[in-house]
Length: 330
Image (cartoon, one colour):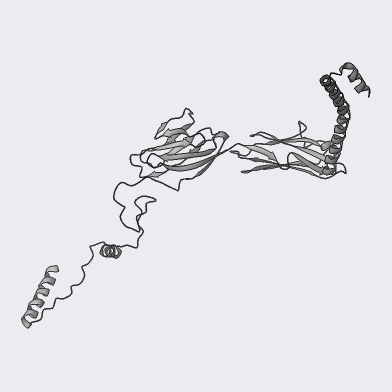
């Protein structure tokens, strides 16, 4: 096909030359190879393509599609790694540090609060055997693994790359201990005849408690006692809530109430059933009793201090026992 086109073009050029005019015909563009798409050809012709192109390395800035600068690439942290990690006491925590273009450098994990070096590369430098680094040969992720995490392990941990200046990527670890708390603690005041409504929340547990026991003054609350009007409701979830409802409150219902979940330490609260008085009045009465006690103490202490003062004065002036007797008699 191309030979026929060339012969045809040569014939036209020769004829034109004989007439004194040379005309070069415009040849049609070449057909694309068998199986190729038009977009591929356009991309090769004009140097651009509308189809997405996967980056060579994550987080690399190629300057709008240009080439990378000459020389070795500098290490860079992947900001996709989480900077905050949470764990429960007794659980395992994983702190990620993703480094691109590490080259011949090394990655270290350092505990911020005491600048203690935990790991360097794949080696563990601390005597605390709960720490170790997890790293696969082809991976850019240097994972600090902490087993049996405790609340004291909470704080900042720095992932550092050995170069000048040192590159640091900080991760905050928060370790939570399961705990129970009663809303309104440590004291609750209710009117006689009203309903006592106690709410106990259980949080930071790997699973909801199997049960929640309620105690009144050290004795398990009997939900089927002849008193009646006692109801217990438990709502399980990420935060479990237990409710103790006591209707028709009476003075005998006053005292310490304890919420005791199956998987964490208990919490307590004091309930005061008021018989027509207010908490402010109770505190005022208590303050009056305290003031009366203090006044009695002063009445006894003042004469005693006066006697001690006379003894010291007599000793310093040398008046002797006679002067002391006259002073006391006076």
